[in-house]
Length: 214
Image (cartoon, rainbow, N blue to C red):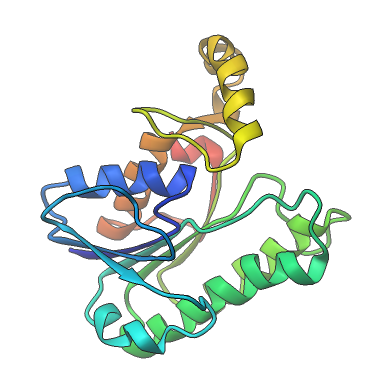
C-alpha cells in the first residue's frame, strides 16, 4: 500500500507513522510536512509544503495512494473559531477533495475526537463534526476516528510542551485507567494499527469510537 500521513510530526501522527513503517504490506509512506519528521527510513518520503489548503504542488506525489491518514491538528485552547476552522476544517477538506479527484475509492481517516457533534456547544466539536460529515459524504471509504484519552507510546512526544508535562504526570495512572475505563483510553500505536485496519478491511460504520480503536 501507498499511504499518505498528514501531521506526521505531531503526537498522533508520530505513532501512526511508526506503525505504517513497520507494516510489511506498506510499501511507501508520503508525509506532507512543514518541518522534517527526523525519521530516516527507506519507505518514507517527505514532501515539504507551505499551505495545506493548496496541495497542487504535491498532486503528483498523492496520485496512486491507497489511504490517507489525516492526523494534523491543534488544540483549540486560545484559538478563535476562524483560526481553528482553518486548521481543522479547511486543511483536511483540501486533502479530501484532492484525494476524491485522484482516487475516490481510497481510504481517508480523519482523526477527530470523542464528543464531536455538529450541534455541540463546544466550538472544536462543531468544527470537527462538520469536517467528519463532509468527508464521509465525499468519500465512500471515509472514516472519522474519535479517540478519547491517548497515551503516547514508543517514545512518541507531543509538540505541545504542557501536553508532555501532563502525560509525564499521568503516566502512572494509565494502567488504572485501562482497567476501570478501557473504552475511554487508547495508545498511539493502537491508533496507528486501527488506521491500517481501516485501509485493509474497513469498519462497519464510518464513525469509529474509541472503544473500537483498541
